[in-house]
Image 1: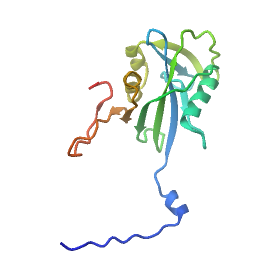
Image 2 (image 1 turned 180 degrees about the vertical axis):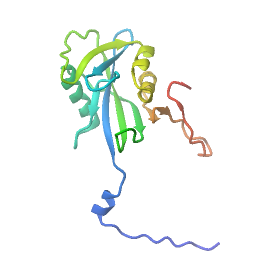
Image 3 (image 1 turned 90 degrees about the horizontal axis):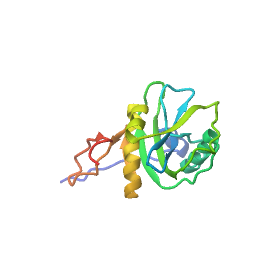
Image 4 (image 1 turned 30 degrees about the vertical axis):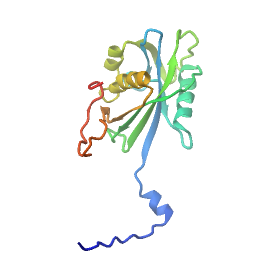
Length: 185
């Protein structure tokens, strides 16, 4: 066997970082009521419902963005708990970059009486059963409902890729396929 020579060249840090992939980040809250129904919000600028949350600002941690967005959208403070779901979504539509979405466990709320809805951003909010929530969310986001419930029950985060469950690596590391997030749990 002959040894192969690998040539490594040094790159200026500014050039190195400028050539790395970049993506957007979002943070969402998974909030339920005492019956296990899921809180969704209806943004004024979208045709569909969404988890409460939004984009992560520059130099902001995702869990801090989650808390900030809940304060801005619903006028309440919640404790941002465990990370439940990480979903990597490829570029789509007018969004030129991938987005990584962090969904955090923000507990249960017995009553929405203290909610002060930001009418600039949201037109409505409500609790929905798992099935109703999945129907109101876009297909690429709906799998996060079941994934979040599963992660909350197991106290272990779930990784999705484009709304698809990514199975653990096989023993031979050749299985790279995925199943819909609503299957195989």
